[in-house]
Image (cartoon, helix red, strand yellow):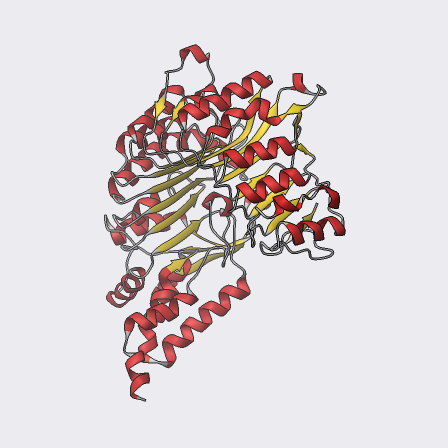
Length: 527
C-alpha cells in the first residue's frame, strides 16, 4: 500500500502515464506537413473515448486530477470547449446555418463582452492549460458571430487568451474580423504557427482578396513582434500574392526563426524577385518549402547566388529551373535534404548542367527526391543511361536516400549503373528508381548488397535473375544479415526469383502472398 501511495504522489510518473492519452491531430500518424491536414477532423469515436477516459480519471482520484486535466486541455481543435466553460453566457444564436459552396451546416455562438468573476476565473484557469490550438472558421461544425471577436478584444485587451500556447493553426475567411482575431492568441511562448487564408472553396471570398492583401502583411508583422520564440511559420496564402508578406517576414522575423513554408493555390500570383531575394535576411533559416511560383525573368538578370548558410532542408514544389530560374541560385553548404517537384529540362545536357550546379551549391547533400519533367521535345527519342545525365550526383558521397521519379523518363538503368551508384553512395539506406526502365540482374543486386550495408528500402522496375548468374565466391562478400526489408518490384517478381534473392542476398525481406501495398516495412510489393 505504501508503495502505491508513493507512486500516486509522484507527479512526474503520473504525467508520464497520462502522456499516452495525449491528443494527436492524426492519431498516431507522423505529422510532417500541417498544410496537408488543414481539413483533417480526428475520428470522433477515438476522440470521444480519449476525452471520456481523461475526464473519468480526473473525477475518480485526486492524484489523477491535475495530470489528467493538463492532458485533456493541452490540445484543442476548436475554441468552443474553452468558451463553453462560461455556461449560459456563451449562447447558441443560430442553428444549422447553411454555408456557401456546399460547406457543412454549422451552429453559430456568441461570446459576450462581460463575464462574472466566477466565469472569468474558470475561463482563464483552463485557458492556461492549452498549448496547441487548431482554429478553422470554415471547416468546423460550429462558428462564432463576428461580434464575438470584438468581445474577445474587450475581455482580454492585449493579453493572450491562451498564455501558454506552443503551437497555433489559424484558418479564417473574413479578413476584417477573424483574421485579426489571431492577435488575441499570440504569446511569446509560441513555437510553431500555421496561418490559412481561405479564398477557396468559398467563391464569394474572392471579392475580399484586396482586403486580405492589405491585412496579411500587418498580421505577419504582429506575429513576429509578439511570438518572439517562433521557430516555424507556415502560411497558406490562397490566391494572395505573398511578396509583401515575405518581405515583412524577412525583415521582422524573431531571432529564433528557423523554418518557413509558403503554400499557394493553382493560379497563385508569383512572388516578386526582390521579395524572393529578401530571404537572404533570414540568415538562421534551416528549412524552406515553397509551394508558390517565383517571378520569371531572364536568367541574366538574376543575382549570382542566394546564399542561405544554415539551410538544411529545401523543398521546391513548383516547376524548377526552366519556369522559375530563381530557384537555381539558392546555395547552402549545410543543405542535407533537397526535394524538387516538376524539375523541367529541355535536353540531357541541361539536366546534367542542373545536377552539376547542385554539386556546387549543396556539397553536403544527403537526401534527394526529384521528379523529372522532360520537355515535349524529348518525347519519343531513344532512351539512354540515366547516369549520363545525372553523373554529377555521384559526387555526393554522403547520400543516404535518393528518389528519382518521372511520369515519362527517357532513361534506362542497368547493372553497371547500379554498381556505380552503390560504389559512390556507400551510406545509402533508400533507393527509389522505379519509374526508370530498370532491368536489374544479380550483378546489380550484388553491388548493392556488398557496397551498401545499410540499405533498407529498394524500389525498382524489374529484376531478372537466373541461378547460374550467382557466383559463389562473390556471395561470400555479402553481409550475413543484410538489413534490406522493403523491396518494391513494379513489374512483379516470380516466386522462385524472390526465394533466390531472400536466400542468397537479403534474408530480411518477406513475401506476403496477395499483398498489394506496404504492410509495415517488412514486405515485398507487387504494383
